[in-house]
Length: 247
Image (cartoon, rainbow, N blue to C red):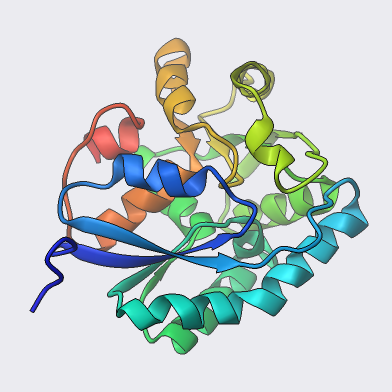
């Protein structure tokens, strides 16, 4: 029998313990009958102030993610959604596929990753030349460039915000993000992609599409859209960008 509340989807969401944006974003986009259940990746050292610090944070993710998955599958979800994106870009196309296999093997469930969701979104929107915004240090930005390059996309412009800590990502203001959008919006950019699930950009991306006349893909919207469509849920929703409204 289906879950009384999650009768269309009971999803486990894996997110860093420092992330305060992805959970409310997903709740905001969840249609009736889809419920979300959070497994937290323990992050002790929140420092992101250098390439070395960024690498240490990813090591913490790798050390803690298995426990987060073990915890969340006890509620017997039927799908896993990754509420963190940095690790899903590492190693490019092959790295993402290997990461996804590891999570699927441990959980026994299908998995949506932010990196893969972005490629699906770009295919749906017909975009090839990208402007990208991240909260990362240069070492993280290099992985994002590699990932999209592996899929044949051209990264025309990239703005890394170089956030100082994992919690600092959620403190980036709308003005900061608006300025970043305008900075990467080069004339030959087909679409703007925002990485980093702790950046609050779902609503702003929806608005920016109207200013710019081109797709602006917030990774939380892309990942949730991908999860919905992978599970046969075709609801169209307004306020979260063209993906959820039109595709």
